[in-house]
Image (cartoon, rainbow, N blue to C red; front, side):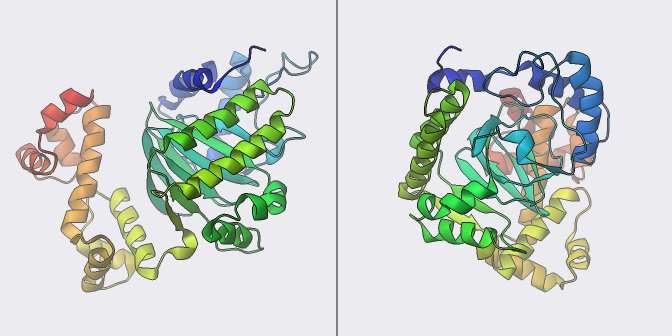
Length: 360
């Protein structure tokens, strides 16, 4: 196999593989897959087998006797490390397929999600996060999550065995107490630790470390497993050395912050009809208390938060659909296209038509 450096690996990540193309084609079909298992079962039976595709990429050829047999997932409730991490290895790294999006699942290993390019949306245990370039999210085993990314995004998942984290966490994560405490608590039975976020401001050094890990994983040369461990350690050291890194964790959310996230998620799911009254009834809090939570956490009013979320949905419709402005206004809770145009220009400085022309 030809030796690949990090620049070549990056070029590979920029292109869609045959498997990703198949995912894209079938994700655009009008099927309502509400569970990850349902989608994968369908994809296995009607796509993987028929096209003889390999479901998960392994860096070395399969045994000659089995190389023509497609590998596919079955009976998925929890994705296991036996499926995603090679024997003899402590972790794997793979590009997150952007299609399908938003299907909830969990794994029996740790998942480190890294957004190299683009942006998306991550839902962890019913709490939603907007993710952007340079973000790392650390998710422990058996935590339900769903990842939605924009089509051109490059998002990587580093999958780490629980046994590896248990053995190595004191060495890898000793440089920052928040990381160390998160790992230690997540290893405990019945833990409430469900996520750790590392916002690195798209640091180029960290990006290079991730690409080096991927290159070692693909090349599988002598001592590659040890090299990957060292790069992983250096990556976490660089994260903590980066003065712009901001760390958040499920353990550090106050009651108000958790309520704010629940309020935001409700509005995102009901952006057409959400009102202060409906949020109050959903949360079982008074309207005054809802407004106070929003103000204390974000500095916004309820109406400004609602408008911000509705306009973000408008932007998606403008770039991803051919709907008229009138139809988008109706779908997003605006009284008329003229009302939407006025509010949109006040917020973004351009008309919806100009925004669509620039971004499509």
